Image (cartoon, rainbow, N blue to C red; front, side):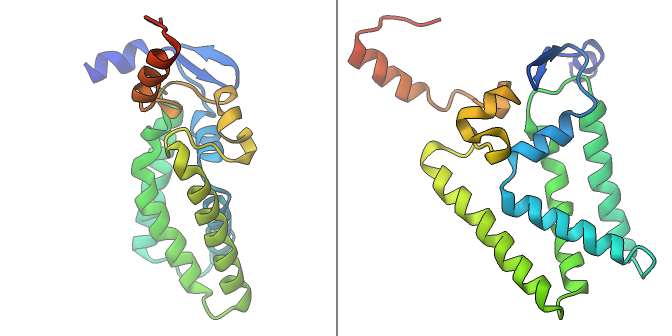
Amino acid sequence: FQIEHTHKGHPGFLLGERSKTGFAHFGLVAFAVKNTPGFLLLVALALSLGIARWRGPWTPSAVLLLGLVVSVFAATSLGRVQIGERYLLPMYAPLIVLISWAASTAFNARWVWTALVVALALHVGPTVLQARHGFLPYFNLLAGGREGGHRFLLDSSLDWGQDLPRLAQWMRREHVPQVQ
């Protein structure tokens, strides 16, 4: 089923456009709007530290982790079934380890400590503020928050039916017999 589904493609949506064959920039947009500002800052920090060490000793483990991140990102971006940010999920574990590795290479620098504290605050703060609305519809300020996210991504990046119980309560309260 998955092979046939991938071959046929799936109707998708990105930035107001529709496609049955996907978008090359899907992974980049999904990553940019579905992550907290703090996590994006940590990725930028890791990239800058990694680029600074490009000529320095990259461990085989770091190269492998980077390969995993790039492979998942490329597969998601080149795939014909782009129905949610969840297809990027396999890259987060190696990416977090890479962030840790990059930060540890310059841990003695004061600016790294400051950047880590700021990034963690920018990660935790929006997450806590969003928690009462559920985590799935989270979109960062680049997307206009959860109210603006639908302009960037739809489908399971936005909703998995998590609000159906609340909808049922509203329907009973407002005497709405059915919805489509």
